[in-house]
Image (cartoon, rainbow, N blue to C red; front, top):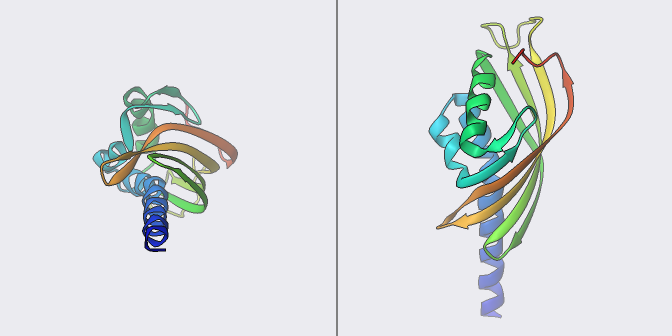
Length: 149
């Protein structure tokens, strides 16, 4: 019985830590904390993003450029499905990301962009935490146009 409780607590801990990874990512994006964003990924991670596909450090070049085009962003992270299998796992996260082109967030602007995406993240244990080893982004819908590349 005691081993079962320990196993269950460990699994709950791991599920919590895995679910936090995409939420830390969104916090980093919205605060332009690029070190926090990068810390969510393994050194050899690969990203299939909504606009680029590349190893993580190459991907970050286009990610940062795209995000910084907008003075303000706000990612709302919604439903999550978390799976744990030893030292690996998976988390699917639904998100709505608001990209405000005007200096005042929420103000109407023809270049505002709102997107609904799903992040499919394969994760691995990294010490006491978890990192993304592979991300696939499904851009489900959008209102507005992506900025020109």
